[in-house]
Image 1 (tube, one colour):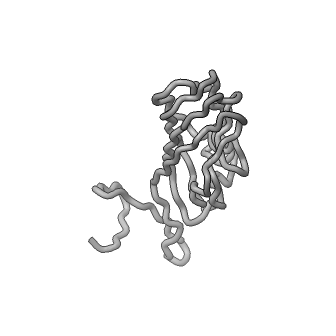
Image 2 (cartoon, one colour; image 1 turned 135 degrees about the horizontal axis):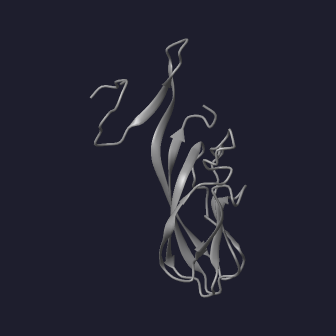
Image 3 (cartoon, one colour; image 1 turned 60 degrees about the vertical axis):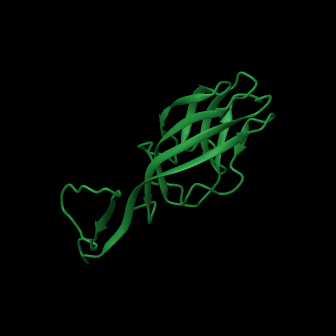
Length: 160
């Protein structure tokens, strides 16, 4: 199928992309795509901030929500508190209390931090790619692994 612009509902077996048409020039810009980003973060036995080993979350990704699953439990009774980036540790999810000393699905949380869709900010996306970082309520003891799956919008620009 050729590249086609539609006005109205569209059905697709392989997802869809949204574009913005400049009313003056007619140019199509700012391709926006519904997308996901998944990562696993190993929680060390000590410390309260833990992050990906390398840059993972893409630039200009607007997270709408995040599914949290603990795949390897921490030894101590500690909770996941914040999810963000290396630059802003509570930028995606701010102030939850989800136990990570047991395995399993912990919930689907809306992104309410300044890098998520918090409603009050005009630059919701992270403009620069960064490591995803989590903050826990205390030291984990024997560590653990937290799997995160972000649901959001990828865009050519964080402001359009």
